[in-house]
Image 1 (cartoon, rainbow, N blue to C red):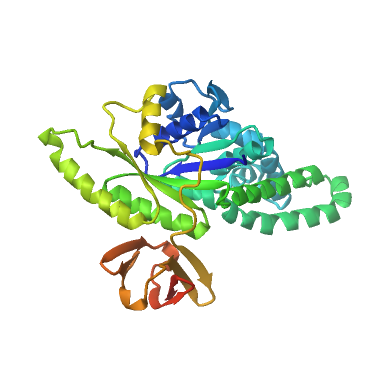
Image 2 (cartoon, rainbow, N blue to C red):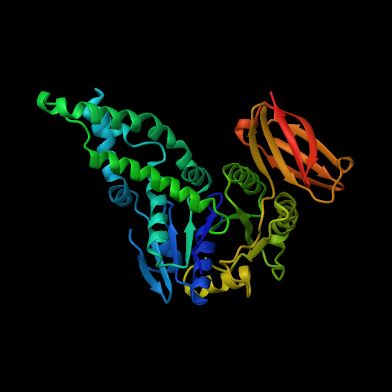
Length: 388
């Protein structure tokens, strides 16, 4: 089978690590060579698996490997040549060498060091499934948007440096000036090509599925909605939502009655906000979900007999496209007419009513201050136009 990448993300503290570890364990038990990787600086994957882990993959069970990515180790492994080349280029441009070393730490460098492991996993072909326990929401968004934001460096610094180095190197050395050599510049080119390749892997829905982990709490749901919108904006395929730590129905203690009532209401909100994505649920266990036995129990609750590596949903529930006039929010709504629809907008939200049901979209910052001026149907999808 071709490699599958499953990326779990969500607000901090919702149980992503346990869910990712349980998914990886179930895949391994099904005979799939599986690695589970933590990109979170505050690692807890080793605690969840009850194993000592390090910066390189380590076998922890039959068909199962695990890794806690160490930022410094990964930067040296994947980014060392890049940093040296850019520092040399900036020094040649007159930037103090100490300042140049600091400037080469481009925004998202730590996240990028994590990303490049994915390239290695895909190219080596040692694993059937890669499960990523991603950092909390903000860090994950920086990680996934890094290939786009890093283009500035490549487009502005690289052509200048390569062209100038080729022309000036013959006369620079006799004058005592050091320019980055061709090997260093090739290292820069390779780095950005690798980032571009990683982005191709992660935005390929056949290869990669993003899964959102939530608790049935309003604050968590709101943040996860915003994350979901941004993932759609960047073209990442979300195929499921995991609602974790639901209080079981058999808990009759009156102390938990209010919690159970709130969770039931919030579970309805989750289903309304993320429909038609499948909602996987897991109970609040009597103790922390750590160790292989509890992880197996968690996997059974989430997947039953299903293959965790399968695509659980195909298609996009909505996406945002840029146009010369502004942006268009596209929502697939088959079998619906314009008369069935009502829109309500405020700064960072757009509420859409279809018949008796409401769905709220948390808008990315690029759409704040823009007005939804027009809505029309095209090929079974509602297209809502935002302009100034």
